[in-house]
Length: 386
Image (tube, rainbow, N blue to C red):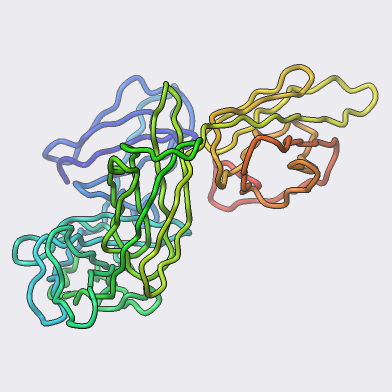
């Protein structure tokens, strides 16, 4: 029996009951409602044990005909360890090491800092792999410097490459341990990004919160100085994004800008803007003699609009930038036929909104085709058409 295993009962994708095993690996959950469930297990780890690696079916049915007894044989835990080194072979203390696993179109991550000797350990891995190991330099501590240019740490993949496609992936034997997986951090040229933030009237905006995100560095958070400026001093070549936030008179002002660093310093001006609203309408082409259907809600990003009886809705608190459009599922018998933003058709769920000047129209039609199929070994499962 394995102690301290977190057992969760899932129903329709949600955790409904949880228990922890005792010293003999036993657990008990009382007063479980009738229905179909899936059991998941977590063993002192950042990762759930994948059900396809557990002997026995994780799916079961609860009824009023007596207790359900579950028994799961979990795979043995694996371990990985190594060091983070600089280009000269010296240890890099406090570097951040990330372990990534991609399986079944999902990406799982866990991260931990190396110690003062540059050593890292992952001792709770319920997957054989394949694992990808990467390291990023600490926020304090500089790499060996060149006489010709300023250098900074770049995210580096095992054994010492900056291109994830060239990384070596690690596969653990069941319950195995792999040591001495040393990563040699790469030092790359870095440049300055000089930022100026102004309010909607073009006046410098001191105190604005700034954030720099790129694939090559940790996110950096800073505050604009009294003249509305700030410098990010360690931007590596590549694309990134700068954002600014400032609350004024109870209104949150925002600005975003994509930045390409390519061998030299960059000047960026961010113009803060208030949020806007977009107006929309849901249109149903209802056949004669059919009742009017319930109108689905429409979500942009994390903001949702509920249509009135005329199908009109408004979504507020939006800012310039990309948004994922997620309308609710249509009523039975109908399908989403078209989406229009202003006068143009929208063919992708991701919209680029610049203002609230273009109305959004979703048109639903009755009928459509039928898809039928059978999913093997998927009793009580759900099928979603995207």
